[in-house]
Structure formats: C-alpha cells, structure tokens
Length: 131
Image (cartoon, rainbow, N blue to C red; front, side, top):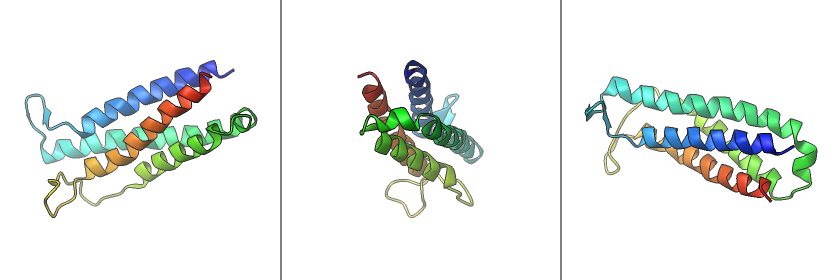
C-alpha cells in the first residue's frame, strides 16, 4: 500500500528540488533577475509548499494506522508538514533579493530554508517507506 506514497514523495522531492534551484537562481533568460521576476520565483515555490502541506495533512489522516506501526514516520511526516506550513505562511510585504551581508532580507533564501528542510526529510520518509 505504500508504493503510491513512495511515488508521491518522489514527485514532491523532485518538485521541491526544482523550487530550491529556482530560489537560488541569479539569472533568468540570460539576464539578472529583475524585481518583478523575483516575486514570481518566490510565489511559485510557496505555492508548492502550500499545496503539499494541505495534502500532507490529509495523508497523515489517511495513513495514521500504518504510520503508527513505524515509529520514525510519525515525527518525520509531522516535521515536513510543519516546514511546508511555515513556508506557506511567509508573507513579506515586498519580495526583496538582498545580499547575505546587506541590511535587506533575501526572501527567496528565507523561503528556501523551509523548502530544503522539507525536501531532506522527505528523503528520510522515502527511505523509511522502502524498508
């Protein structure tokens, strides 16, 4: 019964990997990312997080019994859901692309911290499901 979950988590880790790569991009179509392109990358990744968080809550309910049989899965799935929900809750007034040493935030990098955390834990979930 876990085969469909493995496929789903594989697809999600691929999507989060794509989001991670886009959040770290410095160029689009051969030019530096412009401010109006910066927010497109941010909201695209945040959209992934929003949908995956909602779906993961449903999966927690659907698979509660089988997850409880594997002690490692329950906290991992909860931590992924929390990371994705935190990513979905970020609401900066303006999406800034500040430098690491500057006074302005880099909202894409801030979002990526939650995306990368969820992705790494999804890898752990996949490993646990494959056992």
